[in-house]
Image 1 (spheres, rainbow, N blue to C red):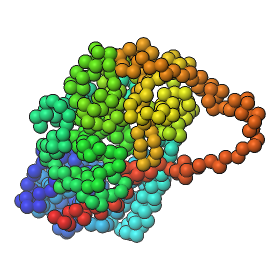
Image 2: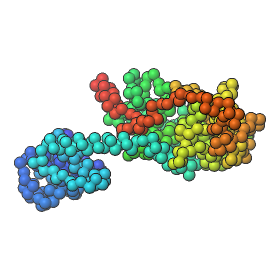
Image 3: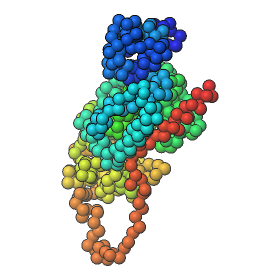
Image 4: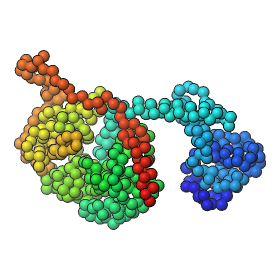
Length: 496
């Protein structure tokens, strides 16, 4: 952070802070700019600070990081402050172009192209730098667009799901951070109210603002400069306001920055969702509640939903976080569209989900005889539907509900191996089905009778969605329009 009122040569940073925060290329360009303003040659400045012109040349070209003591001497000699030297802003448009081109040439991707480096000197024409910078930006944009393919996203999902399975979907470090935050605001028991969530934001030094006109591609916007959380006044369809705010809080507390790639983007979302759930349904209270229900052999996801005032989906996810670690129960979760397509899934109970050649589950068709499909044919959607299903992987007991969404109906189901059904309400269900999938004769091929009657006599018009052919949303935060976000924040700042 700059201190424009500081006296020349004054240092406001520790050595550790400086080493972590400065950018050698930006520092070099600022140093060259200030030296030129003072009409000093490299050798003349070097003499003032007790070093050599060749050493300063390396610093100005971003090839060497100066010691803090040399920085202080340079600041004094140039009649400025250390903070001014270490500012992250380029001093001129020309310097900004030099920095952008220099940094791009130092990336592994540029090295992989086998192209020679462009030596930037004061005599390099500005329009040449503009062309190089423009080409580099367009190349990066196209690379990001190509990388963000549906297959790349599926691979990232597979990797993340394997991590979750290996850990039993339990992250003790996130549980601990959530508990510390709850303790800091004095929350000890019961559901987390809207007031308590606002207390958490205030404890972190943020204010919460409900606004109209939130960018349509966002659920919330965090203004780190003015420490504000912006939420939509109209709410976000399908998302409870507390959860939306807690996810924004989670991103801040977990110190999440701009995602490095799509895999990092997915991981950040999983961690913030987990963190929000750990605040809404604290581990200690939730485990106590679940253990008591298990002792009564009366576990029910809907009870967890009702006692903490969350959605069924949130309660189901939270159950998967705690069931294996604290109850010794392995389980699986599914969110399935009414068309039979898997939207989300998790398992550590060895159930066999349908998957493609890379192991991706999302987008696959669920067997018609699984609970997550059978529930759509049940007239009573007020209560949970329970069913045993015999599969090639064993018999599983599952409980499921149906919830509406703007994109249609979805089933949300939790399942466990047969032996663990005894701990759950609904274990005495008489509903039972048999699934032979992935055998195609189970439900993917018509019976001989139907084939004989209609084979060659039907031509359905497929409902092909254009998004199936599109790349995944591009950008630093996939699917988010940064221009809209920045314009929104600028409008808010101008109203103050």
